[in-house]
Image 1 (spheres, rainbow, N blue to C red):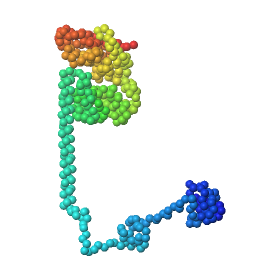
Image 2: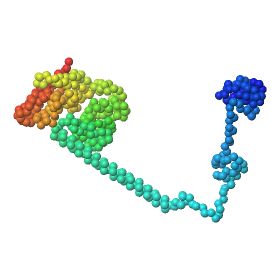
Image 3: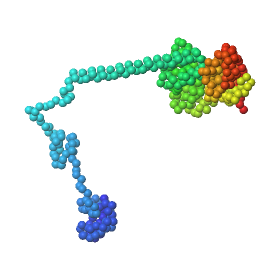
Length: 425
């Protein structure tokens, strides 16, 4: 709101800025003037707004004053003295209550009708319903857990029988890989405490080829001295490369558990600085260098090599990497690794060697034809030398399409040829 003056009679008016510059007629002298042409001087003394009238715009509607009860704050119509809701007199402050007619029947409320027997009966029904629900849930969970226990037991026994018949952990990873995860890991960890060492080993191999990230259920078993060997067997099956991958995970708990697992696997003393180095959040390459430096790096035993069988050079290439005291060898998509017990020695089933060095070779068919192993070792940490041992299961076998010599002609006959890896320059 602003004030303006009529330049002819000095009559004061009230208006708004939106109509500034509009021509209007003065209500007093009936002369025309432009709104805003003349403004009254600023006056520190307050003036009564009733002295001014509105010009150029419609006078705003008078605001209606709202009334509320002083007791219950219920809205009241104008000139209402006694609140119809609570009976409070707005002037005297005396509250008058409505009296009930003695002849009228007062109906009890709903809460007054509810008696204690009804309450107890309702509570009993609620308790029975809740108890029945939880009983059904527990029975269902118990049945599901029992079924899962039986399924895992069958899986471990199948893995045990497979290793007893074939003794091929690489084939086990192909057949049963990915069956163990963080959810069912505790059930497989229980099998590590079995009396049968074959069951322990099968459970360890299944965990090793699974998709496990939370190692806490496994590491807690290592508190007991008799459980340390099966736990280390399981960590070796998981492999140091996978443990290194977990040691650079974004989750701090996963990294710390992986650091403890590496110390347990390689028999490192669990010093605070050692655990800090192994659980540091950094790149995988840096952690790889840290681990090899803690053990000892063997650069002459790693890199790219060519396979040489019986003094005959083969086009097959092998790539060898070191992860602590364990070495990994990759050949055409197949991967093999040494164990902690062997001093830098690969022991590869002949069927897996043929499948890795040949094209479209079926390992199961090779197992029906021949048996044997490829042994490659690096006792001095320089190069890899070994032998290929093969025994024919059948007579008249064809030449194997891989980096291996021709099988013996007679069933039961064996052959042995030297084998080594030549560093590719």
